[in-house]
Length: 201
Image 1 (cartoon, rainbow, N blue to C red):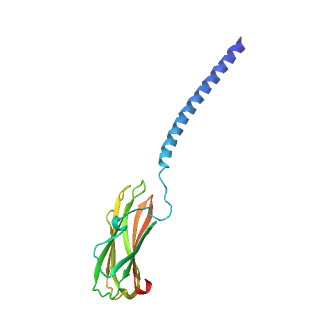
Image 2 (cartoon, one colour; image 1 turned 60 degrees about the vertical axis):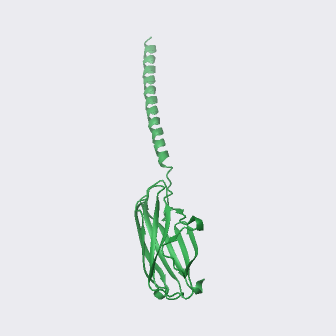
Image 3 (cartoon, rainbow, N blue to C red; image 1 turned 90 degrees about the vertical axis):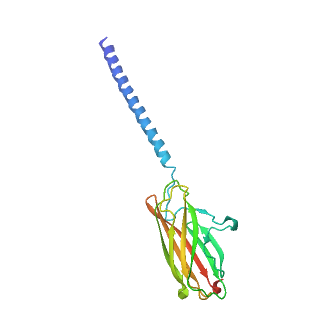
């Protein structure tokens, strides 16, 4: 009889321990599942590696199938081609025959939107004259219309070039480097204008 009572006590203790274990396991699983849900949502945000700033190009002159615009037409400059590949926009301009200009300024504009689910912050832009045969490019400046870019928002990038094309000889290249912070790192977009002389047409 005593043995039966003792066995019953052991059985109750074991049942109690198993019940507590099941409770802890259930609570632990609930927390684990909740954590998985939260982390699962977070993991859907893309991670962008490398230095390229993701861009969604905006065609500013859709009737002409062109991404760029310019504010001061110059009759002896003609657009040869433009290309938007990844993080770089390039417009190539031909210099016409008999060019003889005093110093003139022209502003080129391109636009893109933020295709990511994250914000771009700390927008900056710098310019560099990377090729200036015969010294015809006198100055280059650039600006961005927004220093912070939310998901889906668009920004305009303007590149203003002052030049003095006395002839159509040789080539000139100007680059604007746009940077924004994305996921804690600087990412870059490049806006390049190339002027091509008669010997490189």
